[in-house]
Length: 368
Image (cartoon, rainbow, N blue to C red):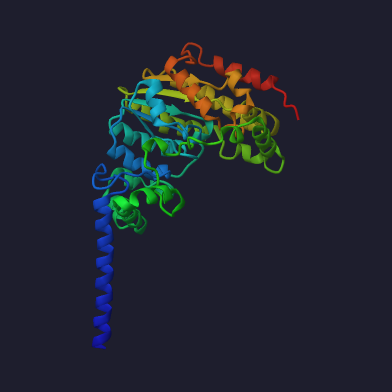
């Protein structure tokens, strides 16, 4: 009996030593750069932007926060800086909602951002869980609470990332492990912050962005079997509440920050799909964006840009991989339009661009 108890104590002691050792390794290496900028090992970054953004906000200096959904995910920070003359931090998150974006932006503003570039689409304001109940974003990690830091330090996944970072810092292993990182079960595989969720430099753009793919996506989402999903999550009253809470509320709390907000250049097929398969959803989109435009243009620290009715882009379906996601060539145009303030919404006529979009959608005919 005494021998069994002694053996159990040894197992527990060994387990405790392993757990504490792993936590100590994570604390020293700090792969997320949550506690300090990386010094002991070369920093590497993850495409898990909901997690990575917490570390970026804490470890990097910036004056401009760039945020949005998958429509803003492929921008490179270096391109944003060059086009707009800023020192930016890209915080875009695929599939993110207004509650997530507002929460992350609030922390970026606390980290020193004096300007925000915000890609704002209608889907942003669909219903979403409270931030503390969100299974995809760790609020405590951003807040730096005891719970958040403890969860980070005692994470087996972070210990694995820390060990890999140490091995990668050994000179003979650095190059082979860096090259192999994208193919290994590690999250922190990007050596350049500019590459976070950006397309590879040698990416085959023509294969990914073309009219054939856009029309295929249009046919898919308008098929009667799936067309009901076009309106999933859309409810005017709820979306207005979310807009007021997550966008207007945040902007009003930071009157010294300039917000450049833009409606992205969806292809014309997105709106035509709603026209043909879900007209009630299209009405909600029109009504919501009218409300958003009228509200935002009255805020003194907001510049609203509307890129949805730029026919030479939105009607050229070679720019798209589906009905909404545009190519890096359009990314560059967006940055140029922002810099030139070319498509600013006039506070005295906030619905002009929306009326132009409506006319285009009504007139457009799909050649099947």
